[in-house]
Length: 537
Image (cartoon, rainbow, N blue to C red; front, top):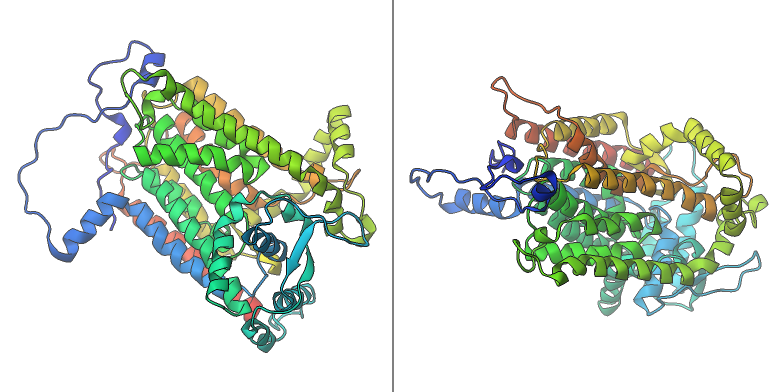
């Protein structure tokens, strides 16, 4: 149910006292404007009253998110053949290792060179091997990509048994256990229920999807009552994000925590609202956990220290105590130290990353040499960066909306157009960030942090995946920019006064919200239809 509760910008409330300066305004917690008591109205009862109460408690966008991401995430989890997600073979291997207590990278014997991985039951390895051969040896159109449906049914119905088989997953062995905890829990539940191989894969996928729904649903709920909730929804249900939520990958939890941090920053910093206690706990937890999910987003997690102490949900809102000011910095310190320690633990795995490349490039990925080149000849690195943009930007653009798994299926044009429509409307109706929001300095710091995070994506892949002397930075994908989207657009909105208005000069809410819901639904449906058509026929 979409309401007009946010018809006027909630950030443009009347202050009880005017701030003496920008600094004072920035430190003040937004207070709701006083309004005259409304005339008594009949209280809604029955089903309609229940729907209204649920909508007010959770927010329209959060409820729509749970519906769209829940339905289409479950659809993707079922229609995507086992291990056809992004690096899902290596992602599943790492999740299985974490589920059985293997938290640190484990070196395994490999004649090709340094390697890290683990061991899986033979029946799971059999399905993995079949899936790997299947998506690497596709038939030409119009034949479906899946060569033998019956093989998946047969291998998926097998019991999880057999002698353990060695599985290579150097690329995911570098990840900490944190982003795999939901999938690891799903795998343990599957073992307790004695599920088949196919059921075990689905259990891991559904556990990740539930984590995405819970974390991101809470993140979108944080922005309830503000029109920018629709922008958060648009980002959260991008087809690539929902597809990943329906498969086994560390990106599921990483994307979710990044959206949570972004939503907290938008509410507390840009809208100037005080967080509730649960929101504060979630913000501080994300500050600690996100840095050990993926190194490229460590700076994003650190941004919570820019939130004024008065806007956290603990302690006094008027005169914050010293501990209120120290707590965010302490959490950021813990997150930063955890990040540094894990990077030290995982550093040796970089020596084995070249095995993901063609055989003639084995041994060509040397992080130490790449770092020397960046520091010794930064002009050459910038030249390579420019060539990468010139040659690959159109791929990154398409991948941002969806290159679905290792079928490498681009989402259809209608999906991209519908998503762009949803973005245009959600940006157009977003709240105006008033005087209580982030000042120029804080906004600039957030913007610079986003740019630095983008740079880290390129530098990380240059060092960990690109051969020495290669003509571009290889391995960059559009999906890596999704976690930065909401906060990047918030920075733009802070300085962009343009908004959509009706004939009376007011920013509409209900009509655009309905169009956004319809557009995101069409985008997801079109992506599912194309995927099923090409993969299954």
